[in-house]
Length: 128
Image (cartoon, rainbow, N blue to C red):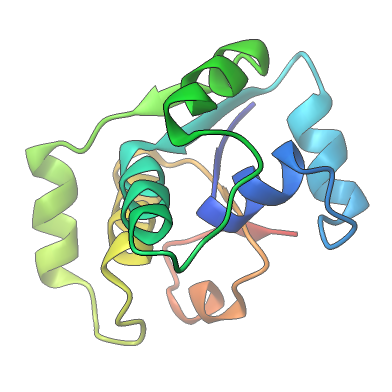
């Protein structure tokens, strides 16, 4: 099955953070599943790290190695994603999360996220 991971899910998984649910960890580590990370998440990490709002354990440029080691697939942003962003109700204001929501809808992929506001969108299946 295919899943898209939210930014914090990626960071918590990579950092072996106890806040990551067992369900989420099991899904991510199941070799039968294909795990996507949005390019929007990498953009978010890069911005927040560069302004000192987010500390990461490795230099940012090495994140790609961690993505490759985990067999995650980077999901690009498409024009179809932006059409959905343009139509999404403003229940959630975070621009990074809004594009991840749109990618979930366009690709019909559940999101692995602790963010309960995602449940406000009928088209989204959130797993935690």
